[in-house]
Image (cartoon, rainbow, N blue to C red; front, side, top):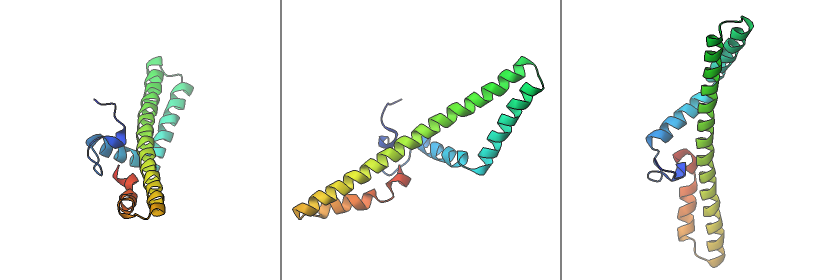
Length: 123
């Protein structure tokens, strides 16, 4: 286990297993199907309480909602950190290009700008 930034793990431009899983899960959780499942989960939670089912059922419904919330939080944070890193790399590339443009040299900055295009989809 490492405490590196999620976007800095592995090789540049390649997603690790966790990042691929997080990306797939992020795509699923932003779908209409997942929203529908969440509505069903909340409806089940309310139904369990309105029907005064045994406490075990109420705990099960509450625990299921807590587990989904925790997983969503982890996915959200991972996506946020990767997007933040991609934005920072783009800003750095733009700043370098502007600086080199003023100095008259454009080779390295131009390459960095090309690499920065679409980086959020690679990390």
